[in-house]
Image (cartoon, rainbow, N blue to C red; front, side, top):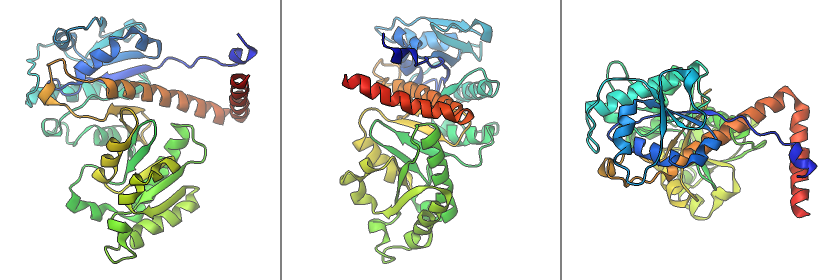
Length: 368
């Protein structure tokens, strides 16, 4: 072993909290398939917020599942070498895979609230949220349309950014789950600058990019054609891009959205800011290399989720593909380590310089 390797210290293995998602969807199946591979426990200590009865129900439906788990309600008894199930409820729950009903939403919310509280109490280091269905989670006790608005409220974040991540691209959104008819009303200079600030800070802290380059898309076809097809680019988007320079943000645009991805321009930037959901998500899901991951930037918590929904049509049939869920776990671990390194470097600037020296040493050793 070379002297180089003695300079490298292994990162702390994070405790990853995992929500159950809709009990009638594919969330628990994806969890079990991901952690059926014992090597996953070398990278993290997983804790699922659910009940052992629900986990056992889906374990029996997976033909080749050999996953074992540790059931507990005591944080001192978390096993770092096993999948852990932290029992949030004890009662029997009627499971109906593939059915949209009240139970699926009720217990998904219980799981989410327990996981969020665990993070607030420093019990977990990151959170993976399994898919829920917006229709059956909203009620008087949960007046939120999904995970993100709840987590934003729970942790008191002024603004957050939905950032889709894959090996070759990152795409953030100014507006998320609102109708197309409402999108233009939410495209303001202030909203764009807020998202750009979150994106820049996240790219530096969570992805290790010191001076990120961000492309900004236009809203209208041909980015408005100088006002012939719409004025949002002239009135809001371009002024936001210009003003971003005063916030030390390297932003470029507005770029016509139709040709931007088709010509591979996204590969020239560290991230792209799209104006609305499908403008960003369609090219992302079409062109991303490998499985996509949804990361919520702007929270104190590290939260990722797979880029698919509850998939009721295949729930309980042992057909779910866990690839995106597994990638969500790895992304959360990577962001956790990046944040630890970022915080350490800012506490000790010499550490950041040492990291650069170490990186050069790695390159030299590989060449030899």
